[in-house]
Length: 344
Ligand code: UDP
Image (cartoon, rainbow, N blue to C red; front, side, top):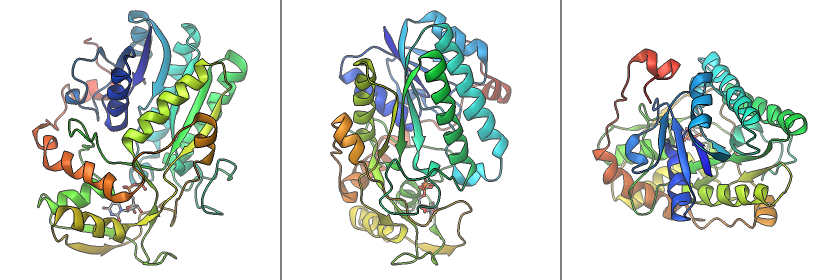
């Protein structure tokens, strides 16, 4: 029986695939390759399909014996969600509905869902724990919260147990340097800063320097992708041991400003990074810092990368190494990418 990794060729999914395989667990990756990379999942059973295509979703459940699901497939750009909300509603809500329907039909009862700190919106208090009201300030967070609510109903009506993991800012790469973060176009802070250090970009624009923070720039809690992997495995085992559905924050509990990240990157890369000041990005809260006490207490999770230098170091190893060898253009026609391909 396999764990189905939906979106397993993406940044976070592929690190979890690697961790599950290291733990000798059977996995199957389902991905439409719109954002994912085949290079990130060498020698992994793979089914190319799109969650928005019901036949694709049914197809993977028919083909493989699936006993649990981890769902990473999503659009994840706050800025984009505020320009094209329909993309986010369709992909997250309709896509997840197709997945839950297939889980119901094929009697698959355990789901780990990638949620986000963006469900909380502008924090009322820091650090944020799971009791904090959920009031998203952007469409990305809003659609993730809507899925969380759907999961409650599929639990009470259909018995599908789920753990929602609310990530703060996923960062870093596989310490071996084999896989890492690669988006096209890239919008995330750390990869952009490192691209500037590599001379692949001229500069980095800081989005807003008039926030009510010490240096005026936004503060985020960066959590290493391998620590996220560890939490997913613990969450799956938690459900498999017969526990109830729940939600957990995943972060380090430390906040770093945009300026601080640039400073750390300069120190690690030894390069001077050219910085420009830009306007605030719509939908960005000033400060997001997690309390992950609940995940530590209930799941026994403990992040291993708890300083920003060690996280940025792994990202640097990846970006100056293997990332350059990956192909960033995607296979398939435009239509296949949006509707799901028929070729399996
Ligand atoms: N950011 C920035 N310039 C960039 C990209 C990001 O100033 O080119 C800021 C962004 O406003 C946020 C932080 O860096 O405060 C982290 O952004 P990222 O997109 O990496 O993650 P998010 O917080 O959106 O999940």
